[in-house]
Length: 416
Image 1: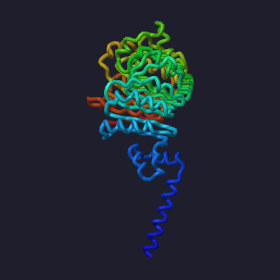
Image 2: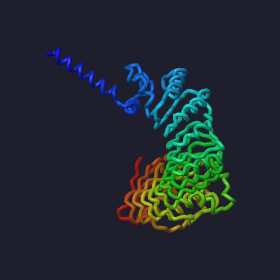
Image 3: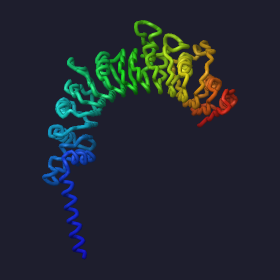
Image 4: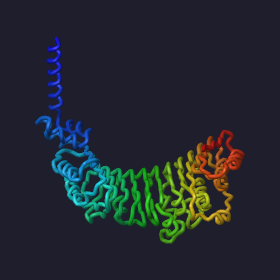
């Protein structure tokens, strides 16, 4: 009996093996995409039917990891030169330097025309992106790190690109402007830690999500369908030295936020708050953000101009429901100036339900900020405060708990 069972098991194994071997090349490639590339290539030794199966992998992930540099270079060369199927995704990451091989890899990559490209080779100076990469017309996703690029004169745009993520890169005002504007269906844009860009001009009619973190002196946003944005300046020097577009005080804010009337979520760093409030304290923004429901702010409460700019933003967000604030200290904030700039703005935040203040140090300006929220928000249910002060909090805590509130349901919760 045992011999019969063994024979049936072997027969079943042969049948299963034959079924796998008879799968279409596209399915074999999809199966192998779930392995790392080295293991996928090794399947070529299984049988003649699997010899070229890895060349149809739709997703290629290359990591140098524990590879010796020469072995990884050989692997990448082989994968790019022998692949003959459709590539949905190409993703390469490495901690070693490959500047000598990079141009060759990009030429081979442009021939197989992937729809998604991620390049994270972070060792050494920035990799100069060759013009051939900008000829991949079917590209949907582009993610580059540690690179330098200038657009070729014949660049026709990425007509299908929806997702653009650039980090640790160098470019110019006109090149980044054209790259974005020549992507007509772009819906996600992230620009982080960049150099060489002074005037950031973002014109993207289909853009829905935006994240900007870097050094720039001025910004113009023309994105009428934007739903979520996070805006951060990398260094305070830029906020202090910036000059409004066309020397127009109004345009300093108007060109930053004036075209974002449809936004739902907005995040602003303290340094960008300084940028917005540099030339004037606004009580009315150039646009009313009727759809804005969630605001995240990083703010220096020592700088009353930043606080007043935040109040102005709240005043022009009548449907705000959730507010998150991170308090930070800065040596450039002038406490004497803060005392001079008294503010008596009265407003209602009718829809605010939840607010939190993190890194709370117990400053009088912080307590005053919480007091205003409690007096302005009739629907407020909870104010969470994360205590980070270095002194005894008992006096501050007593002040917070004694604050009058317009909402009978409002609770003040302090965590340590």
